[in-house]
Amino acid sequence: MGLYDGQIGGEGFASTAHVATVTRTPVVLVVDISHASRSIAALVQAWSRSTRRSASSA
Image 1 (cartoon, helix red, strand yellow):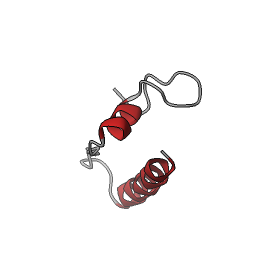
Image 2 (tube, helix red, strand yellow):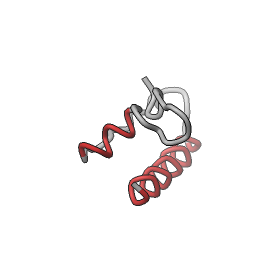
Image 3 (cartoon, rainbow, N blue to C red):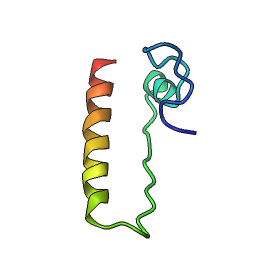
Image 4 (cartoon, rainbow, N blue to C red):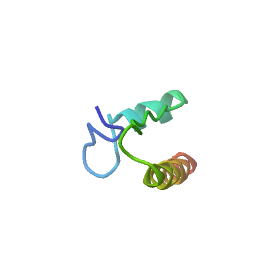
């Protein structure tokens, strides 16, 4: 299940991200880097920045 799966409309209601925000539970990102290299760092950094913005606006 993805972090934003279960979205109804644009509010993200009932998604994993919404539940984590409501319960103030940390989200753990697991990344398989067995077939990737430098591009993974950019992906993780972008994800981290977007989740911080989402958490601060909630």
